[in-house]
Amino acid sequence: MSTDRQTGTGATLDVDHSDAAYRTWLKEAVRKVQADANRSADTHLLLFPLPEDWGIDLYLKDESTHPTGSLKHRLARSLFLYGLCNGWIRPDRPVIEASSGSTAVSEAYFAKLIGVPFVAVMPRTTSTEKIRLIEFHGGRCHFVDDSRRMYEESARLAARTGGHYMDQFTYAERATDWRGNNNIAESIFRQLRLERYPEPSWIVATAGTGGTSATLARYVHYMQYDTRVCVADPDNSCFFEGWTTGDPDVSCDRGSRIEGIGRPRMEPSFVPGAIDRMMKVPDAASVAAVRALERAVGRKAGGSTGTGLWSALKIVAEMVAAGERGSVVTLLCDPGDRYLDKYYSDAWLAEQGLDIEPYTAAIESLLRTGTWPH
Ligand SMILES: Cc1ncc(COP(=O)(O)O)c(C=O)c1O
Image (cartoon, rainbow, N blue to C red; front, top):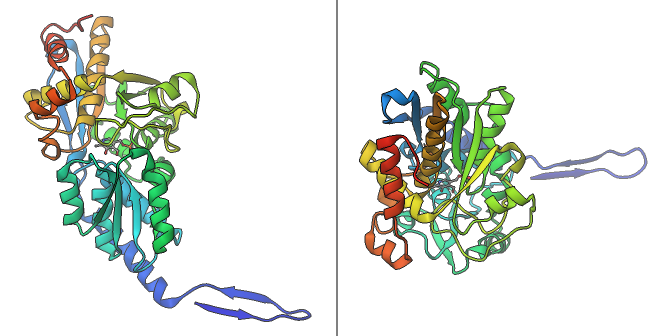
């Protein structure tokens, strides 16, 4: 860093913060993140089988096949590029993040790629598999008992260590290129091009930061499609209430059981005005749906995939009832092997007092008869 000041009559003030070593490091870091994207293939659009005569196609955008196993790989890449290009991420300084786990797994990967330390501030209830993955990628886990304290604890750690608090909940919506640049929305529409209904009637997303739903909805509006975007919200989350009442200050006092989604406050990256519809989904319905996914498609997924799939199936039932044809897309957010001791464990369900039977029966009835039981 060089500083050259001349003062006095007619003098120039000249402060130069450029530093050749830092600029070399920065270029190399950006190249490594871009090269990771260049090495990676797009994620698949899977078909969820429905009776042919309904004339409705249901798809899952399978985000579990990213190198770090979730849709958060896209966000982590965007946040690292944003932080690097803004001059916020510096050599040898830690990157710190508040996360329920998936984002931290992906960010630990990118931190290792560019050679900076990484600390994840997470709820103590985070699944053991996610903790293992963060540590596998060289990250350190720092736990809080109350998930509402993640934000201030991350800011405190960043201030104490001179690191950068990434703050996905604030920056997710603006770090992502929502007009295109192969974002999740552009990729979905490109993959639907040869399908019988290339412009879906509905896209269903879930919200953690709200960034994915914001990107999908903004892209649809920007491209002038007729597609509508629905956000499915689990128990113990206030996005639904905030969206329906218009109150940005709503809060709830218990953490979500569906890892990755459902927040105790309206996160700044959630863009309510862009969203067409919201559905509140009971946690038992999310688990029933994710187990139905395995029976139908042969894939295990995380609870948030079940939350979205439940809503998508409800929309399919509405379309069948209305005699409407078309396509519906939802997301397979991350793989189920991260949650074998939760959503795939009957002991966990019993411990949580969750009875999935009525919801399983509803899904089976829909798939058999085309109607959604009241
Ligand atoms: C497993 C999982 N599904 C869905 C989401 C929602 O994504 P977004 O943060 O873009 O709202 C997250 C976010 O953390 C997640 O971890």
